[in-house]
Length: 413
Ligand code: AMP
Ligand code: MG
Image (cartoon, rainbow, N blue to C red; front, side, top):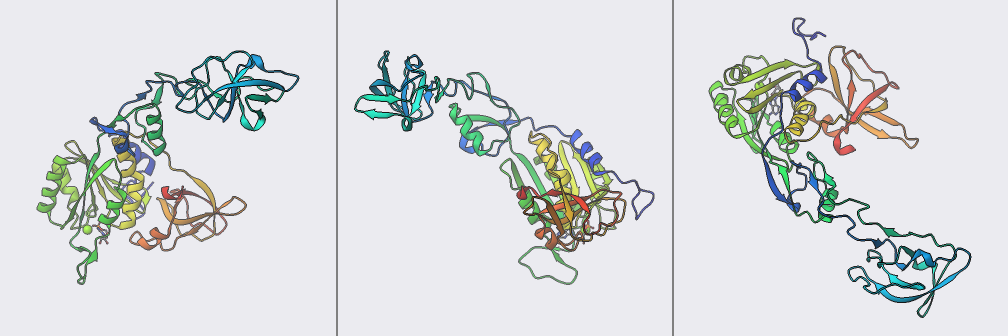
């Protein structure tokens, strides 16, 4: 595959680039103990086992009456005498004899000699005499000891990101703290003499720095401590200083801009001095140039300057890398076939991630519309989009009615 602008340079396919990135990374080794409430969204550093059976005792799954199944009459209605009540939290402690039953409520312990609970709607009550229908099902409505989780069984595997339900699961086993992978420390800065901070008025030639605000959002995760290092001018010494000091304190540095080969693009030269960094031309649009490597133990991503390229290269390379560093397994993005109802312009050569708006029709089929201008500087269409339309490298223009593959953005799923 050749770069259409420079026939000498070979473009690296997206999948291969991602493989190279992931192969070079290892999970952050350090972990820390967190109480359950402070562990939401964090990644388990070790498996968690249950010290107890869940449920710990047999209990009723219905409000009703508990008795021994030997008392069931298969042919006719039968009567048993109620001798007490088992409440949730206040079990019945007496002995259940033949011909007797116990009033029982959901979650209450099933008395020793009982093995069947019949729901209250199916019985007739006359003072202490309870009438049951013929042919009740033995063993009904009883939750068995350990039927959810056996004592010593694995509750959650290592590398699990803790969701709300996981906190509940851990709490149900009485676990009050867990060992989680420590937060990733990520620093990011923008480069470019033209970049102006919001709040200041623009002079000719200047634009506002949007990339750092996107990175702020993209890195907003409880497993990440992200630090915004601001804008660094196109100045070799300043850039070198910034990279050098950040590499000492952070696991990952992400920069945007200055990574191509223009006169003011110093990142390449500096990184060749400071670390081992690959400058790849990737067969991806938007986002062709990408720098990836390390400065000592610090992982470095030099993303392109154009904001939409930042979004795409972050999604395709940085996010999977951050997932791997924090211990999470690789996930393939969800892909859906959809009928395209726009014309999409494309030349063969690079895999394109065009911005689309996906919707599902009443008959269940998916239709995708172009979100508008596809320039890598155009954030408005990126903001309108809810998916990428993924057009493989060999594709050319797409006509209305053709089927295409889309990857919904995560918030869409
Ligand atoms: P560069 O990779 O530095 O050549 O930048 C490519 C394009 O992206 C140029 O038009 C830059 O002005 C623009 N750009 C670079 N950094 C930013 C940023 N932080 N926010 C918005 N646009 C940017
Ligand atoms: Mg620049």
